[in-house]
Image (cartoon, rainbow, N blue to C red; front, top):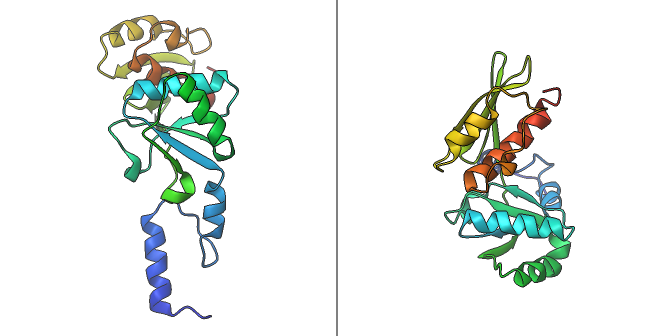
Length: 200
């Protein structure tokens, strides 16, 4: 069947509105296949996401925390991405820890990729990584942490005091310094900036 040019143009515009959609030869098979093996767990509170990630990691599941697609935002800006084939075992594991997700959906069903939790920005020799509401900035020439900012927890100044001036390689991980949501977000940013600048 031949696609009329006006309809073909409309399809291309629709694809442009969905940044997660991969370009394919006239269908969404490639895109759907890439999402079909992943499920998303949504929770009302960030603290539940943190607990769910920890519990599932401890039980050997491969999970990741990401930002939710727009239609799954519930007031918490994180979702847990898990292998869909293990859905029954994942939910049973969470239930034993009194964790019940608000929604469990296939990434294929919502037709949008979960988004990266991280945002990076380079300005000359400096690299800043933001995870959720916390930012960490380093001098890429010597790997020193030059700034910690963001969040609203009372321990953010303490985290900055403990970490600024240290090289990434010698700095303690944020979660060894506290257990607030800001610590958790900073830990994620710390891990990502260390991945991007391993020589730090």
